[in-house]
Image (tube, rainbow, N blue to C red; front, side):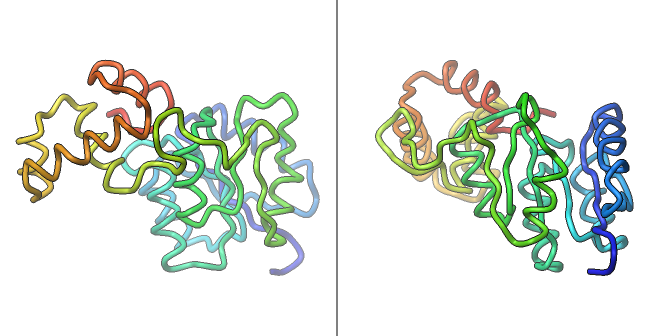
Length: 209
């Protein structure tokens, strides 16, 4: 790994990246090798700069942090990814960990120790924010998060598409989409589309254009 840990910062807010960079540049064992402002740029930078650790915002334009992590780890599985998010929604955390992220910390945590978290994920440890309690159930009838397909359909629901439109776009039957929609609502304990849309946006389950 060499003398210094190579770190890539990914966040769509330049001010946030600047703040993190200052924090990390005070640490002699780190070298910030680059910055990216969206998921596609993150994938390109990871390939080019070969960082040891990527500090990845979860909600990114173009491609979100979870999908960017999947793509990066497919070609560079040795990279440690620390996910940063404003949201502590169970589904989001599970998706991040399933995508291969080594850590998930909340951006607004008062006790955010980024330096320590980066060192831990670089050593192969899993880091979860102290405010996160995984294993808690969703408020609905299922005790695990939404599947990748359900999240994909939820994205289309939030975009205001009908079951028929979603079915056409995803090459599924209308009946299959209806079942997925019902399962999403059951899992989240929500039974009105308007409430579902608000919940999905508020908890960061979808990418907003």
